Length: 378
Ligand code: GLY
Image (cartoon, rainbow, N blue to C red; front, side, top):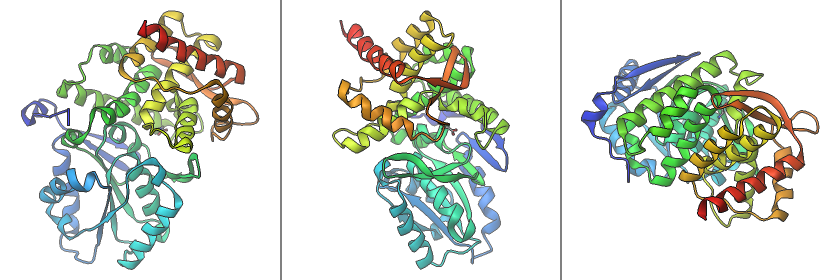
């Protein structure tokens, strides 16, 4: 555990509530209190059943605190699944639906997702189609889930190796962003989430980028402010285009290549790559494509590359593996026709969607990515 939040420091950050369509996002130490208030109206209705989806980490590090502070959840059934992207699939969903049936969940039941991106994506999906949809609440416990996966209603699972191929858009009734849970993260997990914060700055906010460059990752109050601002950026984009017809595609920066890397290493099984680690590499490659194809300046490209490389370890793959990576990119939901679709940067803080990139340019971007690491090592 590296990020120890001092409760007094956290008090310096006022609790915030953000509205996003039909859901409320509570951020801060007061978020748990908000959940308590919200669930109060179920107190006298003993028929309402609660289910909490956890993995082996959130059951150990987060569930005790949750049920201790939200007493009504003592009556919840706890359902545990194994963590990891490879468990985000339809087979696990079937087991979850069977469990819900066995415990007689009904339309009035409330399903709570306590965990990271996998738990929120899959748990939300399971709840939103069970009996044509039951209420669900996200309690994201990782930085990645707090700033990205729990916000904006994208739910779903992977199909074989294709990321998020099955799913739908539906908002949770509440999102509880409680900073204390970040205490339970290791450095790698923390950095994985930080990649999405970097993305938010790159696509939407130059001043935010400058702030991020100066932020010490061990500064809890500053990190909390970043979480809040990142959620605000995502909320503003999703509010305009919840179904990803246009604007929301901005949030896919780094993800065309990032998702292919993630799927490839899932398939290869030799090393586990966290989502944000893949996206960090994807952002360098797609910044290079932005430099070559769009208007991103050389200076901006260098600033992005240096910053990301200073935080993340290189992902190595050979030239012959690039063919498979490109093949995986072709499965991306964002593609139309034969071209591979990208969101590209115009400058730091401004991006454009529906841009295309050739296979040659993608392979050049891999070359750039590998060369930059070597240069930095010298
Ligand atoms: N993670 C990108 C989105 O929610 O649209």
